[in-house]
Image 1 (cartoon, chains in turn green, red):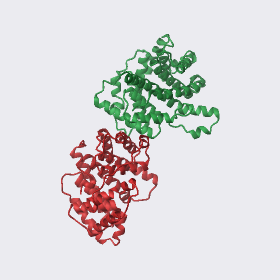
Image 2 (tube, rainbow over the protein chains, first blue to last red):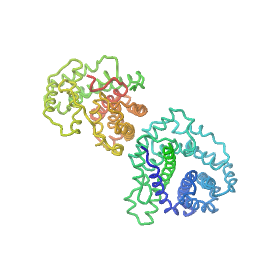
Image 3 (tube, rainbow over the protein chains, first blue to last red):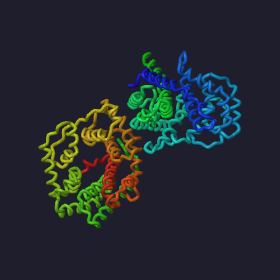
Image 4 (cartoon, helix red, strand yellow):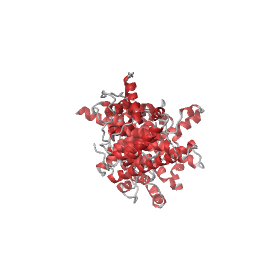
Length: 318
Length: 303
């Protein structure tokens, strides 16, 4: 028996509440200019928030979600500031996370293509495409460039996929947390978060990938690593597949792990540490530890609830 | 169900290599005048699995030599009852079964087995858990014709959440229950039962999680349970067997425990570690591999 879509919507909405309460902390301009690591960290957080908006926007029905509209207003306000936008030209090493803001706002029809040529020019200087990275990151790069309609000469998704860790389906026994992140992200970008089917894979490979995802879902739930649990659930959405028994069971655990304020605890979050901090430090600590897990949880809850809702409607019709 | 994905050549290689290590360890014990009966019987079990479970040559030469060592040691040990008690009923009953398979009886082993049979006859199980705990002993006694046929055993149906988050204690009771309920795979469980479906869906996760943490014994017990439940989870089995094969050292023993032992700052010699750590693990590895890759072999029914 699957989990009701309504429960996932409530879970996701609660996570969005937390993000809404912590919205100012996603601002990359709050960091001092000379503090680059802090600025990159906030930019990355805002990029992930943008991705959440983009995915929710794709599936919007009628009026958009109030939270999502507010988040997009926030991102748009930051993008419009030259102090942010010019960072792409000043610091192309982080091209992808800066350009993501543009891609999100374009996809959500918040801005026109005035900046398209500016970003394309930076791309064509050659540095960005020449930087070395992993196969999964190349998939990520291609996914972002395609979403933004940028011209590039990257190999096809299938060719890039063949070079990834997931394509080799290595033993799940040896996979590290970083390997599992590489696997989940490969599926996100290869399927464009479930938009495209994996029909180019043969049955055996699909079965091997499903086995890996299902087994890791159980393993990471046992270890209460909610960040990877949420990412692996999102992978189920990407594969349009619900592993028997495990899917419902893992969702129940993830929902039970949600904190009263809507956050999902990240892998290094400690309630004891949090309780010992003063109010401001506590807010910064909780944001730093939990923002990524909460965003991924919200994505998984939202996308899977849409999918289940569709199935439920189909079942009613039958 | 067919698990034959390892070539006969590969099985022979791993078995020959392990057998050589067991024989060499026995020789080293003799050189050092090490007379603990438990190790002699463990080596006997290991050789039995190598020659009977993993090899189809049927020579049993190393087994016959080891049996002579067992018999000689039993006859010369001053405190045989204490030594048998120290070895434990399961190892002693298994060894007695191996001797029986070769038409050999020893009065000390027979007396010990009879004594256990007698005390179990006087024992009343308090509950299902108690009964399941004693299942293996009763099963071995039955194989030795010292116990009447066994009744049907049930197992406690855990909630799915409890099973997914099972700790060491719950996992131990789960494996005991599966062994008892299936009588080592001889009895089929109703596959339409909801708990059976939950169990078979989650067992692979529990196995892989155990191996990821290098909790080898737990992983191997659960893997054998998968076979007793007659569940064709081929990818889980394949992944686990590949992993187990990679744990065999070039000398033939199984397990890479040096990093754990270094943390313990143990002053034990390599010989002592071979006996205390590597020997029991090697027996367990051989037992698991034999039952998984040779479907016709089940250790406790092999004699």
